[in-house]
Image (spheres, helix red, strand yellow):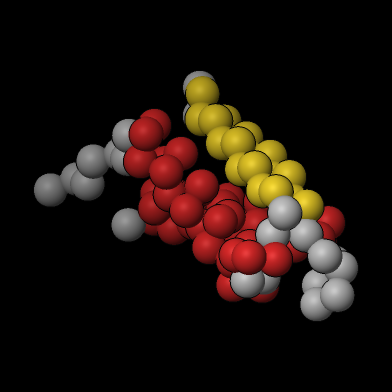
Length: 82
């Protein structure tokens, strides 16, 4: 029996959850001044944009934002692999 493709909503939610999960695995929530994860999935194209305003003490916020976007894409790849 073929598996059903995930819905656009499931894809966006999975990507968003993965990005936020990575951010908050690297920073305490109280240390994050501002965080915005924007995800869209249209015509088979996933777009992930992560903005992070956090202290540079423990990690480089720009690198964490890049890692979060990558984690979002990987989570969606795994969703399609199921």
